[in-house]
Image (cartoon, rainbow, N blue to C red):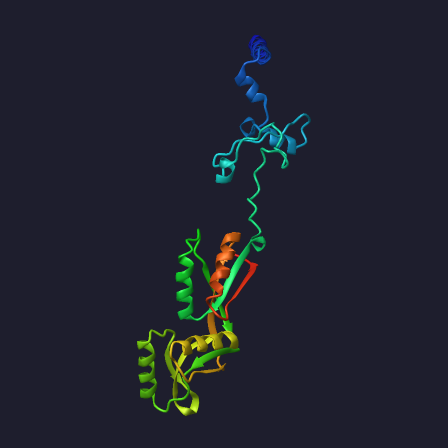
Length: 257
């Protein structure tokens, strides 16, 4: 029995020495056995290390599996300085629009529809580089030329046909208040213009004409010539003399959109 006990003690001592010898030689299975809960060990990144206050930790942006479209489209940062706004390489500002109020326009008129058609035909004969535009003006104190009161519309229409046979233009049959009908020979901006129309018609054999105030608002037309040359202004001054009651004046051009 004593011999058996001695042999077991020696065997245990040899096993103990063998185990200790294996640990000191650095075998991996033995070292893992000595660790506490080795399966729970997890490696952490530098961001987590910085959050835990580990000294020397440096946060580096980690790549994302699904970057957002804005992040993917963003260009890589550059070390070059941003261009100064005053340098030629900066984005050019929007082109300044010309001051249209500084451009002069010549306005001629106003015209009734019949007069405007004749005036535009005269303007086309000048062969301008640009056709004139129209500007409507509304008048509340105009004058008109008529043949006086006619009791029946049929009488007014017969007078209209007689005037048309003499190549008189700007004619229309209109109501003449409670007294019946009349034939209008044009509505004009001023009494002087209406009187000049009546005199011209009288010279062509049209008698018994009246010049009276027009009691309703009327819309006439101004012809606008943009940025005319001096020679063009002189040509329009000659035309104006042929249209009684019209004005020729320079104004700032209407602002175009």
